Picture 1 (tube, rainbow, N blue to C red):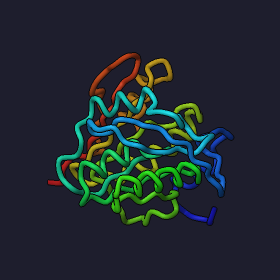
Picture 2: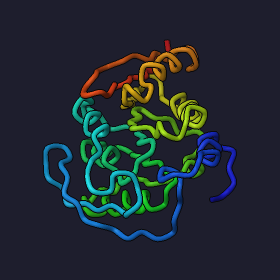
Picture 3: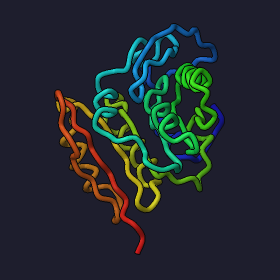
Picture 4: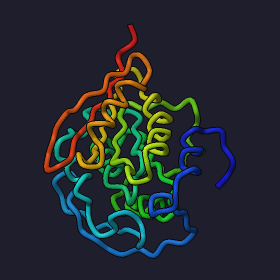
Length: 217
């Protein structure tokens, strides 16, 4: 991985070993059929990445509760895996620019292949250092890697949530027993002025957290 001053990259580098932060140069895809935006989609995922056979429960809950973007813009899937969130945003708004961020090269390869299969040209699977520092986001969707530990998770969120554009929203899904309520309190304390964090929904042991950046006056 190339050197970078991007704080998201430094957070990824300091993460403990695990499937979220293992990079590999080759990908062996296995097929799966999943529902995205109300239709069955024939997609693939590389073995060894997060939830390679289906949409994981947390991501499914986020997709159930968060409305697809109603207008084009610049979107970020933070920790994209094989791409269910990025692909949903891209399908909903084909004119949008969707950045799909992960440090696992097999996850990025899976997302790229799935975008190709769906005919989407607006998905950009990337690592942190490949996103220019001036890029801001109208929407951030994430099933964040809670199990990497608080320190790394906090670094990751502080690197990317402040890059919401004015009026932008970030939607996070976090299991209650993995600290969703304490994470919400931390977000409320640590994000800069002009950011408002709240609990948007609860479902089957998961919380949907919403971070909004106020419009500039």
